[in-house]
Length: 420
Image (cartoon, rainbow, N blue to C red; front, side, top):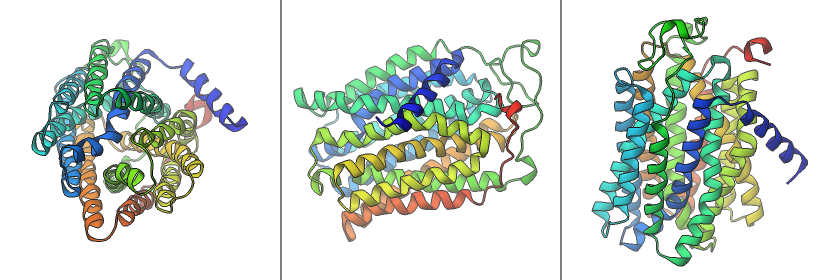
């Protein structure tokens, strides 16, 4: 590990030591869940082709999960206005756990697609609920950092997952990883039952549905920047995340098949890129997210997209593994910087009374980009070549960064306000 990497890791560990209980518990849940996801996700296309899936079915498999996830996010956003977000976290993860156990029983494409869609529904509810809960319990000046920690914790699970997945595939078959992700998600569901009630009011106005009494909360902060721009920030954030999700859909549809068929990687090696993503997120993500709070979240979101654009390019060019791994590590940090900045900006662009539904609508509609990217990559693969399908991910991630330029420049909090 280089000196800069060691310094980044030291800063990340110092930050982790200062975490509060809600964020620590959420991070632990994300870590455990993502271990199973990282074992399963890279192997899903291989499992699907083993039971007879065509490129079109692979695209449909990804799309069905994305559409169901969007429905779950939309429902979760509205439900958080009536039910405690911390309880919806447990519900969403529980559904996701059961669906993945069912996936292990699939013997044909149709039930596999149906069970994958059910997993998307539960995952969508959890995704929106955990981010809304995190917004309720985190300070306004540290929201990008809090979201970065959550993303980095999940990424840490991604580092461990491929090693576990490779061992499982070597000693069993491609069904076992889905049982594992069901088990890890069930463990996270149990942890969600212990999430404490929010004690920090993020905004003036309506109290969160699971908040503590007013007298026990912190003083009401001033209104966040971004409201004076009307709908412009929300539209820019939607378009940016739509493009980013399309890039993810294109990448996940083509990556495993391209790596094994064109680069000559083994099934076990397929998970290495996911591990490198996780490593970059853990080492660079929290530091970049903290820099976003201090120097500008819009700026960091744009910069974060740049290394992600280069990853599909270096893979399509067939560069040596060390070059691919290096770019992947940097891209992992960039993706975490984008994601944490994006959620912090979305929180800044909403008010407490409408936050749940706006979070749900924006994340749900932008998640449909996964289906767009997956089906677009599948068609490019069938009509032209898989190289074109891989490069589609680079194009869409680039569009995500360009769309963020339409977002108004966010105000930078003073060091005192930021807690430095």
